Image 1: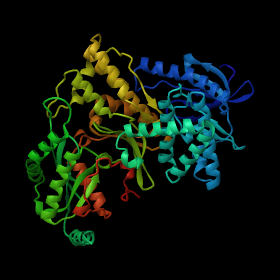
Image 2: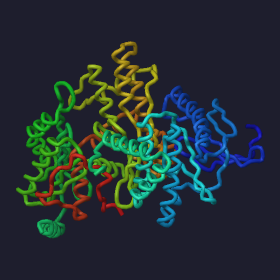
Image 3: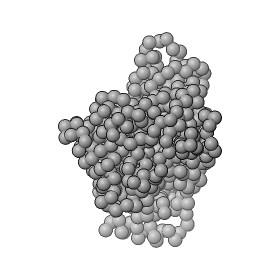
Image 4: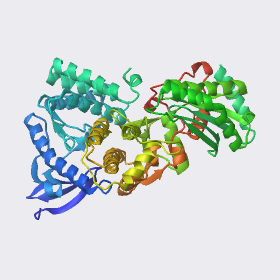
Length: 219
Length: 350
């Protein structure tokens, strides 16, 4: 930690603060999960430590499936801090509404392919929003923020993951939510195969029916 | 056609003095009548709660209660407001979401009043009413709203013509979670002291935090596993009830606070509004206040009287909707049991 040069806060998220710094002559992101005053300290410590340990593990596994994630340089569980590669680019959230229809379709299909690759290997992202995807100048999509993720082969977890993606599109990209989710599922299907895609979509409906006041939304 | 006649009639009336809306709330266990001025003053807000002898809310029994107390509650509201039925310009009612028999009872009263007085009828979305009354009473303009009650747990904010739901429960509501736990523990509620308040009092005496499932999925959350685990621990009898109430509250509230903070960071709104029945809980208030402070947003807590289900919120939202031509003819005023708030066009916000 002592060789960090000029750390600068560039994003204060809900869960963690992100700093950009120079470390071993690389541009890095320092992700620090700061204590939350609102919850009891023992609960707070447990949650922060757990997520700090699990996030890099899942990011590393994601790479093996062919999904781009930042390189992990250092994990400091005690201080709930991760040092990782800085990815040059923009949040997909800010780009998606402004591009052409074709480009939007292409990006969403790519997102779907990546989710399909993760799910095929039992990796659940846990917070699939367009804020957690970085679009690089070379049009690569990086997935970040695996803090709520888990490793499981359960269909239920995959369905909830996709349900969250759909919900994020509905709340943030409401003008194109349906077509975007359609493209995501196209990409997903191309990777997962028809069998799994069908099973997961069936489960998504089940998850949605369990929620509050949903029949009108599904219809 | 009827709609046009109704609107014309009101234009004529608008030139006279102050106008009033009477709102009826009956979506669940409370029957409420509120009277609001068109400028937002609350003249009356009377509620009578249905308290089951045992178990949860039985929709048919609750509806029977509403029918029994309707004229009494209406009478009290008129008495308090010091205005007569003939001075009303519109009648609004909670059209959904909620329990069918309960909603229908309130709707029937509203239709009868509207026909008898020949004034327009306005159907109001219950969830939107909770947010609108919160904004009115706290002065919030464009908040991220955490709405927590017996039937709802969601985080919403306005964007382009509608309230958008950013996060919500994947299964049961926060109030429901606390209520069921309280019933399992053999606790009793009474008029003015609902289960949530009983749990809050016990939790305040708890000290030991036992680990319970903490399930946040993106901006959504799941409470059913937490409830099951808490009840299992209760049945085991190794943890004191006060400590269990404390642990249940801390865990459930930390979860809703985390998703609210996520939505706040995502939307970058400058106000956080806490509304719904569970908003009366002081511990939850302090947690939401903490995240508002951390993100430089103003914390807006709706006064308890207007946080729980009430008629005043239906009256006020009725005014907003009516001013934008959203009166409904009686034949189109069926209740909507599963009417999500993100389906409703909200023309009164610019």
